Length: 484
Image (cartoon, rainbow, N blue to C red; front, top):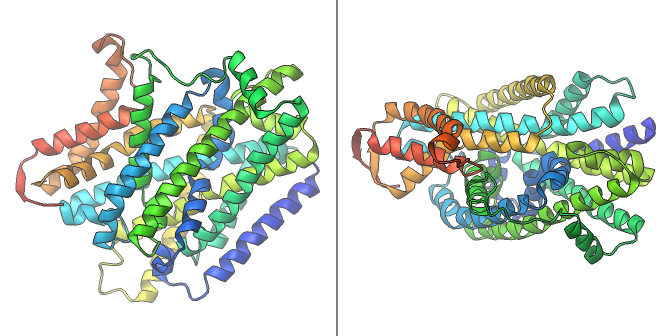
């Protein structure tokens, strides 16, 4: 692709984001930044959340897994679908009833300050690692296929992208992101549909014929029947459901957008409609993966994994497809970081620094603190992206879900114990349980095959981690009875 075409596309795209930012951030205040003054249209939130949930990991990694795993990932997607109904039915009513800005404020009322800050810190750790891992994946693809040839270093690329994200999120926050994510989701899905259509046309296949060819090649395997296998279908579906409950329902970034909707009913409509579309989109990404492998075999290309889609889109297909792929990739890049930085800023400012609880702070002072935190998290993201570039690990989606299993487990346990029991354990001991549970889960996972007759944990490690947290909280001495 021509360097000039790439630069024109990037500048035009960024210009559109800046225009949206300018239109949505006029007269913005801290409530605009944190939850869009609770006035965001539910259908825009639902559509924009598709891009946030997919990100560069789905755009690049999910098609690449088809060669080795077939459609097994769809088992997890079914679990996601179930999990969204749990979030809509249990967690959203809780957040609206308590009128929360940060969802971790629930832990303050239910347990106390130690549990509250522990929950927020686990979110900050998990979201920082997860978001920067997604960001690294997309930057790395841009670097390998375009920017290295232009003589632009990885560090320069990462720094410029984070500066762009700061430019359009710095003032408007969630109020801006609701609209920018909508635009970015539209371009991402457009790129997906166009790439599928063009490859089908080049191979002279209908969707039914392509699916039949994928089946003959062994790419459409949907279920793993060996109960000891990490991808056994029950483990995958249960793991997917709890991943959704934790990574969406207990995640400030995702819930910050949901609670920006005016009413609980509209927020629930957002969650349910979003879940249906997400299932269809994930299936289409898996279909694209099978199609890409068939096309690569027909051309005699030896490429697989995360390199499959970028290689065919940038090196094999016509330049117009390369441009569409690039737009889709950029659209996957920005939602990987913009909402995360905004949510991390909100959580750290509200939960850790307590700017909304401090009566000695004026609104201008709160705004100044929030802006400094926003800048600090952009710097942290840059450092983490450099760290992942140094690791140079290709198994992005596996790393991402492994991180979730360990860091969201304590959050799952805290909220489950708070909502389904009345006991109030001694607050100052809660952080010890939340740190011990992931360590114990790691030890069990490491020795599971020897201890349990060959059993290996998959995504259900998150459930184990949450259960260990609940068990530990139950064993702590109580202070007094509490009701969620």
